[in-house]
Image (tube, rainbow, N blue to C red; front, top):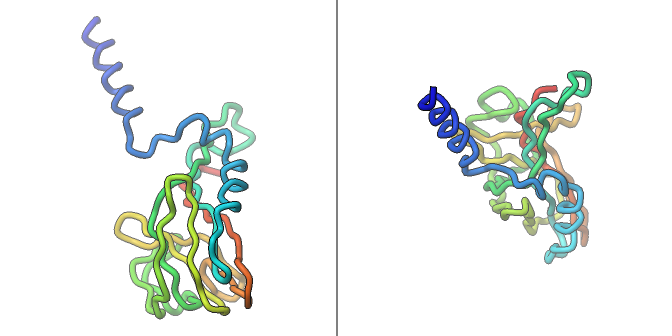
Length: 165
């Protein structure tokens, strides 16, 4: 019986040692992190924002929620405005984007990212494992669209969702 308890503790410790375990502070302060990230903007025209990962059971009717939302670091790919006609794969994970790649940026450990862009319409994808993740749509087939206006920074919140709703 003693060895079974030891095995359970080892499994528990291994689960906690994941390379992306959110801290309690990050989970509780996601809105504050977004607000803090908005103060870091150093570009005049382009896109900035916060990348958050959401996971767990986020159903409000199931009693105890295991829903967690916290910042993560990932590489972001900015393409010219992209629709379902320009991708291989089915959302939210795409394997090929056949639109022109405009630029890359990386979200820091607080999820903050920014990229200087010319005015125009773009699509943003998150590098995730062997694909490009994008879960936003615009109703015209556009994937994760963002519009940049002259002398303006579009602030957005990107969600990498592994949650159950």
